[in-house]
Image (cartoon, rainbow, N blue to C red; front, side, top):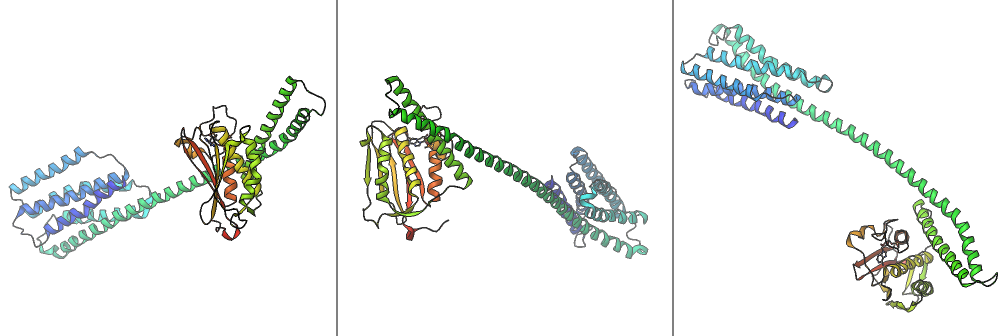
Length: 448
Ligand code: ADP
């Protein structure tokens, strides 16, 4: 709307210019055809002024009426040309056909709201009206432009009409600027409202998240106490502290104990996740020998792999010297990540193929520990979900146990240790997950 109005308004000074050039002394006045072209330019310029005004206030335009109006003017011009009409006759015609769009433009401009355009609106109306004042003077002297008595006044009126055109153009420009200014003001008000709305929503989401975290922490604590009793007592029964169990009883006690252990792991994971979210995760960074740490973790990892524990193959590519494999990490948390990798390799891997744990010197800042399986792999469309909490990346309906938090915890933990985590995977061939562990303190990267 805005642009439309401006384009039509641009035509106003342009056609006025054409009119002025044709009306200047340089044009041969004997050639009346040019004078009529000039007159047409004058009428066109005021018609465009009106169209611009209508567009500016968003009023529908009756193109047929405007077209008919211009055709009527051209026809009358043709007639006047054919009868060789004199200057006053010609001017009368232009004045009549100019006055209609000028008066209409003023009426349209009056409809602009004062709240937005008061100054710009009255400035433009004033200068457009000045043309009416000049035309009135011409009517008053009965278009006797060659009458010597009016000589200086006619010159003055002609000058004044040019001045009014210039200031009308300025008026149109400042109206356009005023429109843009009010649009910007509205936009910025909208933005502010949107920002406030967003802030409110964010605050609400944060509150809800805090509540959730608090709930998880409390629930996990409360659940752990009875669970420890279940695990403890079932273990006592398993170990036959209170007498031998028959095979059926043993089977049930095994189930109770296994279920209890599983529940405890899930609850511990939940607790971990909520403490990470609360920023309460304790990370104890210290200089550790990576080979020694792996060695200490191996029995646990083998236990996870289960009966055929020799499926877990170790490829250690770093030298064993204490200094050359020093890392700066939290031992317990690193173990936790490796346990998650290996248990995933067992859960989602092929039960008949190896799980390969590789330790390598990745670059000058990191050692890499990776766990590779030859399992089902991960579909590319799930890559982005792998580290999201409570997302099982396509395994939601499988009967493999899990709640989808292990890797998200692993990622947060390794980031706390200033390391990295990532994976590669091919569907049907298997996956390899790794962590890059920062080398000892002297090699620490600046915290980004
Ligand atoms: P969980 O195993 O409890 O679901 P994780 O956070 O450890 O949670 O893993 C998230 C998801 O990533 C898993 O549900 C699984 O879909 C996928 N995933 C993890 N490790 C592997 C793997 N080695 N092979 C295939 N998919 C895996």
